[in-house]
Image (tube, rainbow, N blue to C red; front, side, top):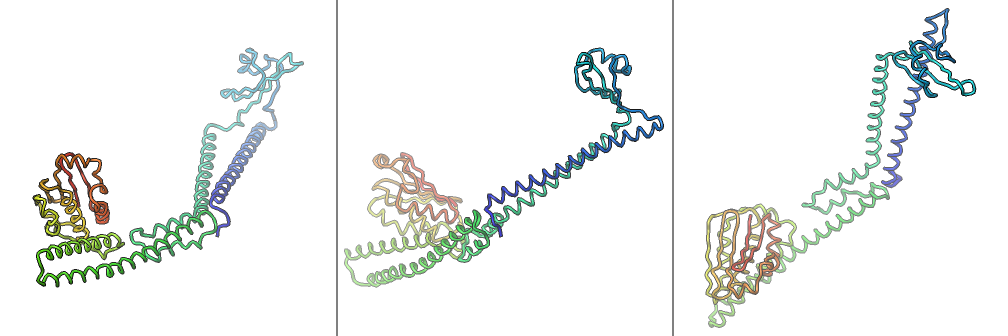
Length: 409
């Protein structure tokens, strides 16, 4: 278990990598210096051994320019400044110093012939140093990866646990995948605990939603079924024309209530037992909806034109599609004034268009800026949600002459 916070662990890991690399580089440079020092002494001793018994020194002092080696005389006559000079071609190193109370100049010449490494040896040394540097770099990189992985291991574990959860199919056991007890009381532990509690609340909400929709589906549909049965019995009785009109209004109100209940239950359900993959024909549903809502045009003298350019099949929830079309058609029928028309319902291979014609008076009351899923009819926001659930698209277009509701699949 980790005893420090994530921020401290990352800082410690970084400091550890820097410290280890610094120590490694320090030992490498120290070894290089000692190797160079030993090599110079060894080479100088070898030169002396090769000249035995006449041992000559490689380091000599000169107080006059005339006594310098011939290759240095011309340079010395230019009165060089005090300091150190190197002559690669002659293999000489020269130090210019002040003598005789700084009035004259002396020369200390170091003959490095046979002591300095040859060009081939320099290349080998460069290759060795480059190899050591590369090896240390790779070791440092690998060490950094290992240390950082250990430092952020809790984050990786949490991300893996969250990644195994399917947000589209949450279950009541998904919050147990996090298991926040595995993490210490740091930033990661706090995040894990928060995610676990959030998933637990979501799981509880899903459970309550499923229980509510299953109970509401029965409790709300039962009264509608009873009312429908009573209406059927009343139809068989001897009723006056006025009573029949009243009965017809009750029947339509009951049907609207049934449709509304089914619509909201459809939206409330988290899952619907695979009905979103069902294939169905569009035309029968459209025809049924028009028949159900035609009473809204009984006194308006408005024609309904159906243009069937194709006979498409749609994948999704047939009840949701019927509810969406029912809302569009009912809105079109309700918002059409007497003598204003015709209302056109156009069925194409990939879309359904419901068009209202506007007269000048209606156009003044309705502007294109109102053409939103929530600006034309109470149920268009619901239509938008139904389309989103089924992978369809809905749009509402308006101008000065017409309003077009488009449902695409």
